Image (cartoon, rainbow, N blue to C red; front, side, top):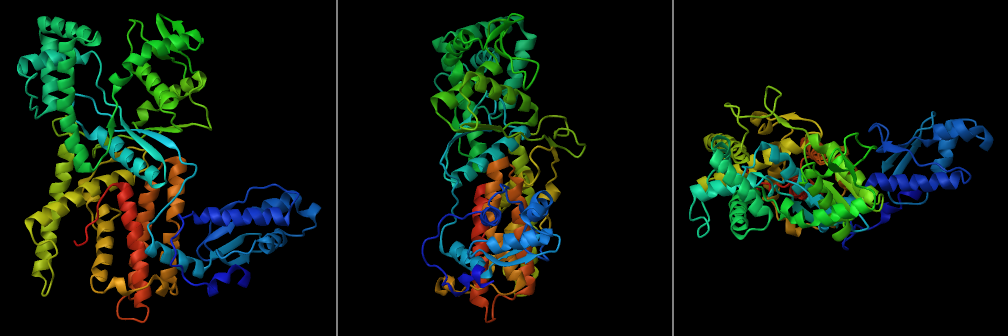
Length: 600
């Protein structure tokens, strides 16, 4: 046992900590070395899983299979004997504390408490860092609303999932390009330009204040459908715009500017950072690109259209040029992936849209591979699809009148409901004898409501398996006792409340010790934070981080129940464990896109 616990005598570090590494990966690496050393003639990947807490933190399951295939030839009588050989071949390390072997051949390991202690102390002393080498150039395509249309509930998922994905990739050291592929081109702009001329005749001099983009779009569509003269003018405007006419282009730009202002209000509120690169950006690239694909035999004529066939994905082809000679979504997306892979030299592209577009993007990836732009595994392309947001009737979330829910209205409602809950809590605190009211001013209460309401919406969305639809429910997302952002905020605020009673600056990280089982469980969960990040990089499922936070906060509650923090000999050590937990919570909150409250 001493061979694995040489860290018992080591001092806690005060040096700068290297980036956190997944614990599971480190344990797996040690078993890989042990299997190679014990059985040099056999090549087998280590099978390491999380263990049954009764027996250990991790479990290696190789011995049974090895015995079945090679045991007798190598002179072993039982799987347990082969497991003992693996145990004896483990290289000296300070990570593994105890190793036990079951008769069936299971190897259970416990992480050494001195290693857990040092890991927690390092979290306290340093910034939390993670590296995913080599550094990649990553394009994340997300949000992508349509110009002249209000952002609605359907844009919620792409926008917040995209922002968090970017934050995680940046946290891992990658160069991230956050692209907003807005719908800023198409035949609809003819009617919008004509309506702009009618409704705002001086729009060239003064940017119109369009309070409701949705109504603006509907009014122009009604004129287009009802008035043949207006329709003809609109069609001429499209031709003028597509041929680069100065007036049409100026009017189009103004419509885009009005829409951008409306979008930016939402982005500012949600703390979203994006670089707009809409459909129009790729227009000039399409004709030469199609010509090149034709010359290379990748683009073929079919029923009057120029098509790229992707039989590995779908029977229907991509239409690089439509039957009327125009360009559509397929053309633009082909040009976009060409630009991102070939011109920008991206290593990795992530598209974040609803699941309904999954086949389309797989076809785009396949076409890019045929063209030689996408070269897996050197380059990586992912479609990060998500399910629809539903109402209680399990249909798309709508207003009572059947309209699509505007994103701004959805956020306002969440904030208003959070404000009501805060008001009740303030009244309860005031009624208590000697009770302290933390959010005294109306301004503080409104700020807290905004943070809680927005965080509640984001967390409730991201805790779902993103590929599944989910039912939107304000009551559930604001439940202070459920798996919600509100519960996590209370956990964070409780740590802050304890810390306000002491002088944290006088406590050295070297005072941290892990003794009680509840302390160990909490320290072990903190050590597994990088494992969660690693898993997200593989499968792009953000709910793994929300699941982790829920488990972490439950372990924190157990820790408080079983381990008194203040007024005991272990106070300083436990305060440090609380601080390590606070830092992991704070970093995770940032990655998910919300700001915690110091007091609630």
